[in-house]
Image (cartoon, rainbow, N blue to C red; front, side, top):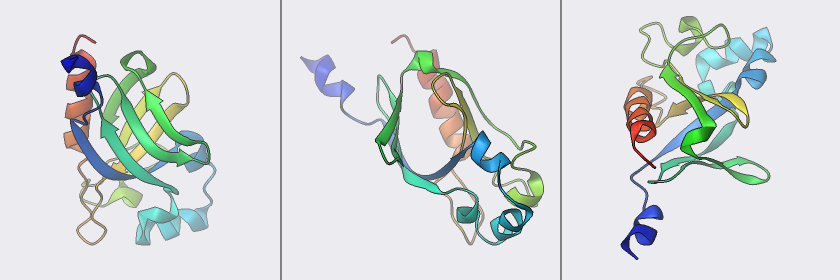
Length: 139
């Protein structure tokens, strides 16, 4: 009985803005310039990232609703700049390296978790550690 209740209790939750690799790759140079002013120009998806004992959920990912991952769905997770989202767009100090999650169902997704627009900070490193620890657990 206790196990059932804990599966529905979130261990961590925060707001995110996100995009897929394909979405970022299709952005125009105008979008990239707009992205230097506000990351919301590049990251059109918004919701909550929620970590449960048995799943990772990105709420409101698309019109169909939430995107839910089990441990076996996630191939890798790291914070890094890429060819689709580089240091120039992400902040000169490297404070906004996106959280890049490579998944079997939808490929790579880029997230900025709990992003502070003015300060150009995120909780992406914290979430990378949380997700990696979760992946390492027996489930």
